Image (cartoon, rainbow, N blue to C red; front, side):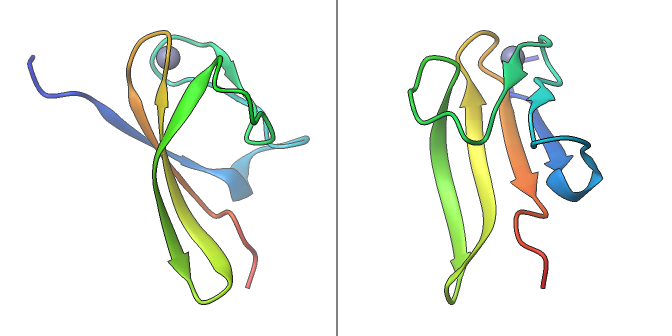
Amino acid sequence: MGQPLVYQVDLKELQGEGDFPCPGCGTLISPEDETENVYVILNTKVNGDNLEELVIQCNQCKSRIRLVGLTVP
Ligand SMILES: [Zn+2]
C-alpha cells in the first residue's frame, strides 16, 4: 500500500471503439472522451508525429493507467 497502482492497457487488444473498463474500478473509459469527468491525462509520450503512450488517471479510484498500442506502425 502507499504506492499508487499503475495498470497497463494495450489498445490494440481491445475490441470496438477503444472503450475499456478501468482495471481498478470498472468505470468505462473512452480515449475519445475529452471532458475530464472520467479521467485526466497525466503524461503523453510522442515519437515524431505519433502518440506512443498515454498515462491517465481514473477520477474514480485514482489508479494510473498506461495506454500503449495507440498507433499501428
Ligand atoms: Zn478507476
